[in-house]
Length: 343
Image (cartoon, rainbow, N blue to C red; front, side, top):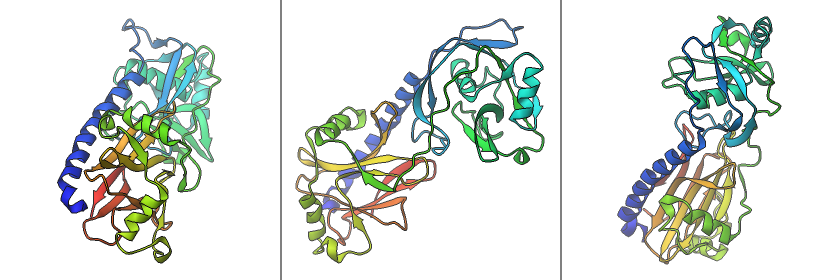
């Protein structure tokens, strides 16, 4: 069955991957405010107007650290002024704060740092590596903003936690004026079991899928597989749930947390005369971004998805359990990108 549609499935995956990148790039552009106006070359600070920051990064984007970065969460910030260039170095944020106070200023909050970076750009802000900023600590480790030196193009969303001993020469820092923000960085830590129920109705899932450019056509008429449909995928291989101890088989839609700070929604069902398997990134505003998908050009097929506690970053999917070339794996790989593979 699946072997006959393998070429169609692969073509669907390739086409959707291209569409996913275009959609993600468009969403990222929309999330970034317009650049700040030019300032005189002899001005030592950038004046940043009040506005909304979409803190963090798009799930699945290159270089993203899901455990540290929010999912483009909206944060309202007031106006402030920030140093155009980083100052010297300080052994820790406390030392940086004291130095700023000596200049009638304060250490920039990490949200201000990110807002300035997004507004004027990392190059204009002279971001060359990590810098201390005011913000939360994780035990003895303090927050540092900016990418590590030598890691490639600077990322405004880059965020790390360092102990002072990890930077023996200290780190640069920036001073800000005007009132410090009352908002805190949106917590990116997603806690909970590796697998959990997805609280969405079939109608909500259908609407969410067709709203995604890569799935707009292939998801029309989507309905999730029933428990009986899922059992059919096992019966085709002459097996049942009770007789399989290696895998726990899941509902047609569920929450998957394959790594700390990462949450994905997995959905499977029929759309017209096709089978559909989709992995989605839930966003802070309740919408989704496309992560990976496969379209099976066989209307009578159904999919069973299995999970193992010992390998939470990999799921099994099959249309005929134990049959050759009738399924594959859903994997969460380095860099936070899920893939759908065929076996």
